[in-house]
Image 1 (cartoon, one colour):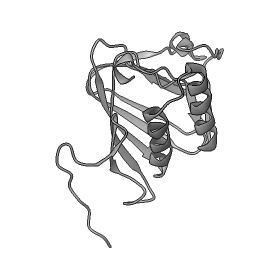
Image 2 (cartoon, rainbow, N blue to C red):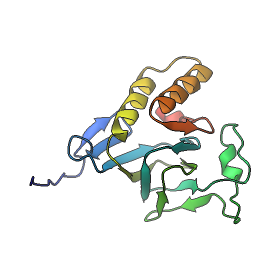
Image 3 (spheres, rainbow, N blue to C red):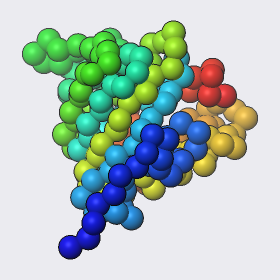
Image 4 (cartoon, rainbow, N blue to C red):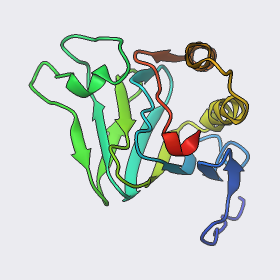
Length: 176
């Protein structure tokens, strides 16, 4: 049996300048906890994880988000914000204290509608998703100059990590 630990505010391993790994594969094979901060306009793009369940908990700001199979999928940037499920569910506006659960295999996305930054606690199971997040952060630290090449590189990383990209990610002007 091993001991747990307590992290002080600001503790954790930085993943780029937007994420802070709190718990990951180095601690347990079972789950991942990451604190995330994204500027206004950031859109992760609609996608599906084959093997990960996820929980998003809003700490600061607001998110637009969804977790359902849409009646019709479209692939243009941001088009997921108009999607609707078979039962009429639509994209939600989540404020501080809101939670979204995403089962594996479920289309989902989130976006910071602004005007300020947002922070959330991201929890996933099993652990290991932090390797994908690190590769994305590394790519964004020195991105291709062409936005289309960047989208293709992000899509390739997602495929490598068993994630189907449905709509492209859009970076926040703050994060450029």
